[in-house]
Image (cartoon, rainbow, N blue to C red):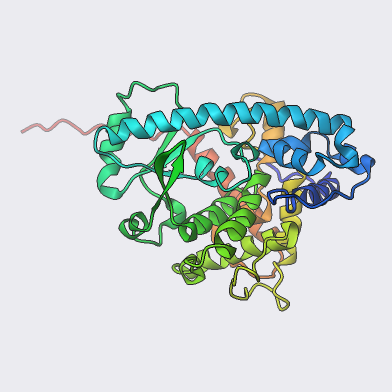
Amino acid sequence: MLAPPTPRGGQAAERRGEALARLLAGSWRTPPPPVDMAPELLQSLGKVAARRGTGGLVWRRLEGSPLAGHPLARSLRDTFRWQALAVRILEHQLLEVVAFFRGHGIEPVVIKGWSLGRLYPHPAFRPYGDLDLWFSPDQAAPALELWATAPHPQAPVEIHSALRHLRDRDPGEVFSRTRLVPLDGEPLRVLAPEDHLRLSALHALEHGLASPLWIVDLAVLVETEGVSDPRFHWDLVLEGNRWMSEGVKVALLLARDLLGAPLAEAGAPLPRSGADGSPPRWARKAALRALGAEQHYMDPHVPDPESALSSPRALLTVARLRWANPLEATYRLKAPWNVLPRPLVQVADYLWRALGLLMRRLPPRRMPSACPSRG
């Protein structure tokens, strides 16, 4: 079937991940920390520097530094300008969509995307492609029905009738903790920071940090909400299913070790992952390789497994990219977040998904027709 790929280029991806982490660390601060990086190392990042929306933050670190005139830096400056335009268009669409739902008595909660980008010095430093909206349980079905006939089909809205990363929490209580924050003077409803931090951490782990922005989000949430807001409660962040809470701790430790997320300053309780309070070694390596990856199966141009079955070349590409990193495999199989190595977890995850693909491709069994009665 789909054979696991050899780990070619893993060490190179890890080195690129370390370089990208150095550039992203503190990039959200005002002013950002100075850059100390050789031009050759910056050049080695190539397209990874702008992968999945990180270009604006990397440019922010390089702007005003001796590397600002580097060709890659100039390209990232242009990337940021495009990000700023795209985000502004999405903000206008978001206001229209929220007004549309409110006009019908339905209150949306903005999650991910804009609700995280507003915490950055400029929303374009945290680009997004969808307008993610969640609704309270009693309004989810009416919202879906209403949007099916909405006059705004051009807006990239994704409606969430449930928050699977907060499935261990009562939706009514989650909604009751939401807050109103302004966009162009219009109050928009967002999750409480504790709920959003937990959701963001588990979402990042589920997809194996496919986007470097997701680990930056954790650092930004900790610094802007956990440090500065006296109402922030860590007990609420870690409340709920124990396995999910242990995953949140691992994600936060990665954000601290790789990007300098100020967990201690925010009063976060000492995590339990390692004897020295560090994330598991396999998790750190997986995070670095994810940051330095030049390609991921979630990228738009990568075919899905079922469509790739008709092309041997596409199948090999999909087989290689679908080899989940340890974070993703651990999340999917609900394996313990301990220090034990992950190869067996990755193999089990790969075989389980290959079996699922095979079962989907098998023709459905035909039920035998009933014999006519002779009554």
